[in-house]
Length: 498
Image (cartoon, rainbow, N blue to C red; front, top):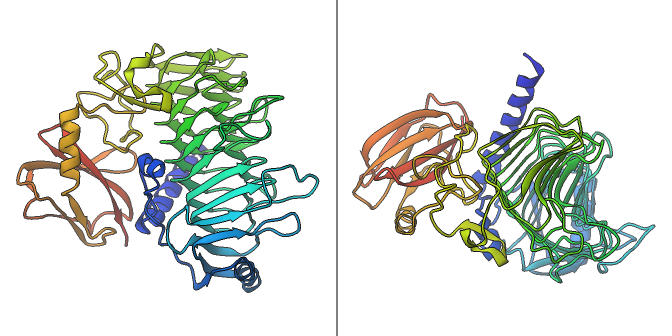
């Protein structure tokens, strides 16, 4: 099998596995849930469960997990735990360890260090994961001298975690060993509440030698430098990273948005899609929205960018080749620098302030039907949803940008229909049933994760329940799209287990 096809199937396997695993455990969200702090709690459990109520008990549980080889779940009761210092911080050598709040409320469990201050040459991290297949969910990490989370193990899941006020990057994928691979960071909030960081050596995700990461449905705010130089990116993969997917994230007033590669330190492959990036230019070091530097074979699809820096997207250096930049909505140019090469198609770089719902808050959803961009995008086989996970297209074609516009009357109807639709059992192994209180005739379409239509049921009644047999389906994720009147649709992920 040619190497490019082998790489493709490895990426697909990872995306299917991590989504089936985490979403089957209730670990999913939309970006609006992160903003309103209504993300589904994560129900993942490994092995023996330990419940802790004090800092001493939490430290003891960590030591026990390490000494016993892992396979433990540590549930943390509501409260504030000063768990990290320069003399001791959670260093997880074991694999298969879960850390999550007992209540599921990210604001009710707060893990801290000794404050957002320089501790060099000593080290103070919120967590350092050496072991593989670890989970951290439904809690807050803040006030640290170094990173909120550092990781060199593989298969880390970060879900519904708020990270604030770190003196260095919030999540660090180290270059120790062969780097951290196959991680998923989702439904989390990264921010400096004061509106600016403590120094320029800060960032959201700073990932060295990271491959097959999925970064989705997160919010990044105010990762901005106060002096000296610009801050690092909200999301950054470089130093021989590859095959990462960054989608449906909201980035507000961060010096730099999303970066693949840096200078001559490369990234290869990967997808950046359905992200919204806004910067009001107040920071003295505000910079590019999406930057590709020595990042060949990268796809940049359907992002919305409104910033003050002269270029919304840059592709730089001769090593950046075979890049596709399609369906992006920007207010500034998409530019080559230092001999970077890319194919540009159906991008729009004349975005106006009144096109968006709330520009000052970074809400770049469309306020009205803009003829220049609604239904004007190219159809992409691997882009079924927008930033809200609304099905594309809603009209006669894909919209340009991260948001697929829905007319207000249709939106109200969609919300009404969504509230009545149920799909069960999910996961399914033999069959699943779709049911709705509405008596209208509906169309049901099943897609795979590549956006390929597998089957179509026209004119079915959901009020009595409509059953679909999955016994001949392969295990994995499928998307069930339910449409009424050809315009109103809901998309539900189906997990098929064998």
